[in-house]
Image (cartoon, rainbow, N blue to C red; front, top):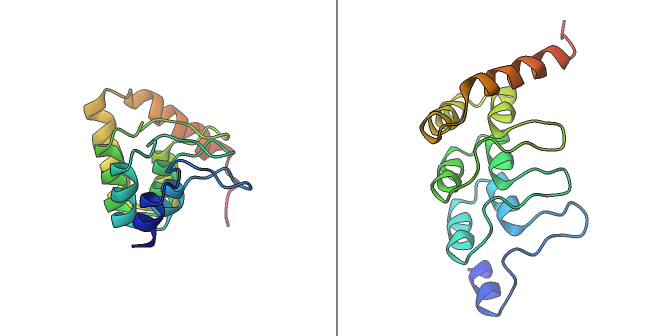
Length: 135
């Protein structure tokens, strides 16, 4: 309701905060706010906008296990293999956090969109080799 009022009053849908460089779509995606994500996308929010660390709303949603939001963003044309400042993709972020349903969804979308699986596996392999071991 508040988001609708702000948009109706002329708020800029892709405005970024001054600290993280994140848009309302990024924050809503991270927090699983499906209705707000839909509202922002319908209002013309840029689906692949990046914050200061080059993370997209899809990266935020994937890392936090927001399956319904990930699906919405993919349906809106989000780039599945975009990389952040550290070279991490949404798939890597979801895998790292153990969000199996999101991992499957991203893998399926990557396969149907033609994203090379070998590239994804190599990236994940590199990521695994740079992580400190836990005992």
